[in-house]
Image (cartoon, rainbow, N blue to C red):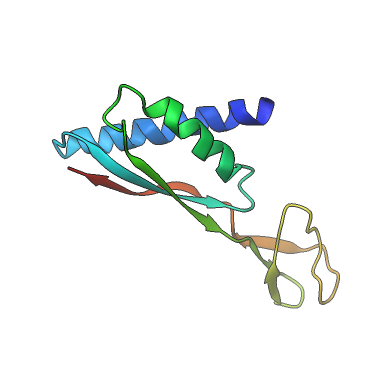
Length: 117
Protein backbone atom coordinates (compact mmCIF):
# COMPACT_ATOMS: atom_id res chain seq x y z
CA UNK A 1 0.00 0.00 0.00
CA UNK A 2 2.76 2.44 0.93
CA UNK A 3 4.57 1.85 -2.39
CA UNK A 4 1.37 2.50 -4.34
CA UNK A 5 0.88 5.82 -2.51
CA UNK A 6 4.41 6.83 -3.53
CA UNK A 7 3.69 6.02 -7.17
CA UNK A 8 0.27 7.71 -6.95
CA UNK A 9 1.96 11.03 -6.12
CA UNK A 10 4.46 10.53 -8.93
CA UNK A 11 1.68 9.66 -11.39
CA UNK A 12 -0.28 12.77 -10.40
CA UNK A 13 2.81 14.83 -11.17
CA UNK A 14 3.16 13.14 -14.58
CA UNK A 15 -0.47 13.99 -15.36
CA UNK A 16 0.02 17.61 -14.24
CA UNK A 17 3.11 18.00 -16.44
CA UNK A 18 1.28 16.52 -19.44
CA UNK A 19 -1.76 18.77 -18.90
CA UNK A 20 0.39 21.87 -18.53
CA UNK A 21 2.30 21.00 -21.71
CA UNK A 22 -0.95 20.42 -23.61
CA UNK A 23 -2.44 23.73 -22.43
CA UNK A 24 0.70 25.62 -23.42
CA UNK A 25 0.32 24.18 -26.92
CA UNK A 26 -3.43 25.01 -27.00
CA UNK A 27 -4.30 21.33 -27.38
CA UNK A 28 -7.74 19.88 -26.82
CA UNK A 29 -6.67 16.39 -25.79
CA UNK A 30 -3.63 14.37 -24.78
CA UNK A 31 -3.32 11.14 -26.77
CA UNK A 32 -0.30 9.62 -25.04
CA UNK A 33 2.40 10.32 -22.49
CA UNK A 34 5.83 8.70 -22.69
CA UNK A 35 7.88 8.50 -19.52
CA UNK A 36 11.30 7.11 -18.69
CA UNK A 37 11.62 5.24 -15.41
CA UNK A 38 15.05 4.05 -14.33
CA UNK A 39 15.70 0.78 -12.58
CA UNK A 40 17.53 2.69 -9.82
CA UNK A 41 14.89 5.41 -9.39
CA UNK A 42 12.96 3.60 -6.66
CA UNK A 43 9.77 3.85 -8.73
CA UNK A 44 7.79 0.75 -9.71
CA UNK A 45 6.62 1.07 -13.34
CA UNK A 46 3.67 -1.33 -12.87
CA UNK A 47 2.37 0.77 -9.97
CA UNK A 48 2.60 3.97 -12.05
CA UNK A 49 0.71 2.24 -14.83
CA UNK A 50 -1.93 1.09 -12.34
CA UNK A 51 -2.38 4.60 -10.90
CA UNK A 52 -2.49 6.29 -14.31
CA UNK A 53 -6.08 5.26 -15.11
CA UNK A 54 -7.39 6.74 -11.87
CA UNK A 55 -5.39 9.96 -12.24
CA UNK A 56 -6.52 10.80 -15.78
CA UNK A 57 -10.26 10.55 -15.24
CA UNK A 58 -12.05 13.81 -16.00
CA UNK A 59 -8.87 15.43 -17.33
CA UNK A 60 -7.39 16.22 -20.74
CA UNK A 61 -5.70 12.83 -20.51
CA UNK A 62 -8.89 10.76 -20.20
CA UNK A 63 -8.52 7.85 -22.60
CA UNK A 64 -4.84 8.55 -23.25
CA UNK A 65 -2.12 5.94 -23.31
CA UNK A 66 0.83 5.75 -20.93
CA UNK A 67 4.06 4.50 -22.52
CA UNK A 68 6.81 3.56 -20.08
CA UNK A 69 10.40 3.22 -21.26
CA UNK A 70 12.32 1.25 -18.63
CA UNK A 71 15.98 2.30 -18.28
CA UNK A 72 18.36 -0.39 -16.99
CA UNK A 73 20.86 0.59 -14.32
CA UNK A 74 24.49 1.11 -15.28
CA UNK A 75 27.42 1.76 -12.98
CA UNK A 76 31.08 2.67 -13.40
CA UNK A 77 33.91 1.82 -11.06
CA UNK A 78 36.03 4.83 -10.12
CA UNK A 79 38.99 2.55 -9.37
CA UNK A 80 39.28 0.31 -12.47
CA UNK A 81 36.91 2.14 -14.87
CA UNK A 82 34.80 -0.90 -15.66
CA UNK A 83 31.11 -0.39 -16.50
CA UNK A 84 28.54 -2.92 -15.37
CA UNK A 85 24.83 -3.52 -15.00
CA UNK A 86 23.65 -2.18 -11.69
CA UNK A 87 20.56 -2.69 -9.55
CA UNK A 88 19.62 -1.41 -6.11
CA UNK A 89 21.49 -4.31 -4.50
CA UNK A 90 24.84 -3.61 -6.24
CA UNK A 91 27.31 -1.90 -3.95
CA UNK A 92 30.69 -2.82 -5.39
CA UNK A 93 32.46 -3.40 -8.69
CA UNK A 94 32.19 -6.98 -9.97
CA UNK A 95 35.70 -6.71 -11.50
CA UNK A 96 37.88 -5.30 -8.68
CA UNK A 97 35.35 -5.35 -5.81
CA UNK A 98 35.91 -1.65 -5.04
CA UNK A 99 33.06 0.20 -3.37
CA UNK A 100 33.93 3.40 -5.27
CA UNK A 101 31.13 2.99 -7.80
CA UNK A 102 29.13 5.67 -9.52
CA UNK A 103 25.63 5.32 -10.94
CA UNK A 104 25.70 6.61 -14.51
CA UNK A 105 22.30 5.49 -15.76
CA UNK A 106 19.08 4.19 -14.28
CA UNK A 107 17.95 6.96 -11.94
CA UNK A 108 15.79 8.62 -14.60
CA UNK A 109 12.22 9.63 -13.90
CA UNK A 110 11.00 12.05 -16.54
CA UNK A 111 8.23 12.83 -18.97
CA UNK A 112 9.87 12.29 -22.34
CA UNK A 113 7.01 13.06 -24.75
CA UNK A 114 3.40 14.23 -24.72
CA UNK A 115 1.38 13.48 -27.87
CA UNK A 116 -1.47 15.97 -28.25
CA UNK A 117 -4.40 16.65 -30.55
